Amino acid sequence: MLDAARGDANRMGSKAITILDGGMGRELLRIGAPFRQPEWSALALLEGPDYVRQVHDAFIAAGAEIITTNSYAVVPFHLGEERFAADGLRLADLAGRLGREAKDTADRPVRLAGSLPPVFGSYRPDLFRPEEAARILQPLVAGLAPYVDLWLAETQGSIAEAEAARDATRAVAARPFWLSFSLDDDDWEAVSAGEAAPRLRSGEGIAEAATAALALGAEALLFNCSHAAVMEPAIAAARAAAFAADRPLRIGVYANAFAHLAHAEGKPQANSGLSDLREDLNPAAYGTLASRWQAAGADIIGGCCGIGPHHIADLATRFRG
Image 1 (tube, helix red, strand yellow):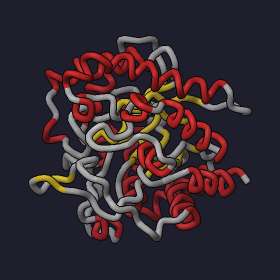
Image 2 (cartoon, helix red, strand yellow; image 1 turned 90 degrees about the vertical axis):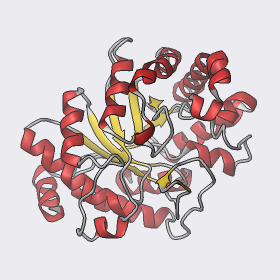
Image 3 (cartoon, helix red, strand yellow; image 1 turned 60 degrees about the horizontal axis):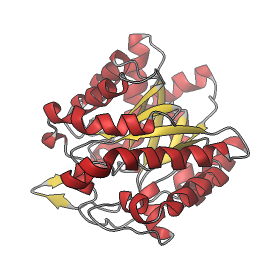
C-alpha cells in the first residue's frame, strides 16, 4: 500500500508543503514558562501569557505558515470544573488574541488555527461523553472565533469526538475545518512493519476516519500526537480512502517525540506525567521522516509534543529552500 501511495503522489507531482508549527506545551516548558500538572500549557495563559506569544513568534521565525492557538488545555480536564466555568471563555479569548497578534505582526502571511482538543483527556476516547461535550466546546469556540482563520480539531481519539468538535464550530461563521486524529501507537513497530493496520485510539480504521472527515466537510485530514513510525502507513490508508471516494482531501502529519507514555489502568493518557522525549528525533531525523510522509502523499507537515522551532526550521529549509 505504501508503494502504491507513493506512486499516486508521484503521478500527481510533488505538492507544495504547508508547514505547521510544533508543540506549544513542551516549548513553553523549555523556555521556562509557568508549567505544571494538571494545568499543562494553560498555566502560561494564567500566569505568563507573554511566554505564549514568545513561542508563537519562535515558530513563525522558524518558518511555520500556520500557528495554533494555545487553547489545547483550556478544558476542565486540565483546569478543573470550577476554574473552567469561571475563566474558560476568557482564557480561550486570550489564546486567540495572542495567536492573532503574532500572526498580524509576522513579516509574511501566516494563518491561525483554532485548537479544539479532546475535551475529556488526550488518548482516552473511552471517557468521551457526548452529552457533555457541547458544554465544554461552546466557550472554546466562542472565545477563539473572533481571531482564527481555520478550526483544527486535534488529537481526536474517535470519530464521535470529531463529530462533537465539528458540531460546535457550526454555530459560528464558516471557516475551513481541519480534523486531526491521534493514532494507536502501542504496537508501533508492527504498524511500521506492515504487520498491523494503522488505526485510531478508539480502534476505528483509517478508512472509517477518512469517510467521516469527508462527511463532516473537513478540508484536511491529519494525524498527530503519535509515534512518528505509524504516520506513513496512516497517510497511505487515508490517501487510498480519499482516492476510492473520488473526493479531494488534503493529508497532514505532525508527530510527537515521546519516548514512552504514562498509562492509567492500561490506557495511555497524555499529560498525566511528563513523558521522556526521544533523543534520536533531532531536526534532521524528523526532516527525513517528513520527506517520506511527503512522498506517501502528505502536503501538510508540522510537529507535536517535543517538536520545537529547530525542527520546524529544518522542515522550512527542506521543503521551501
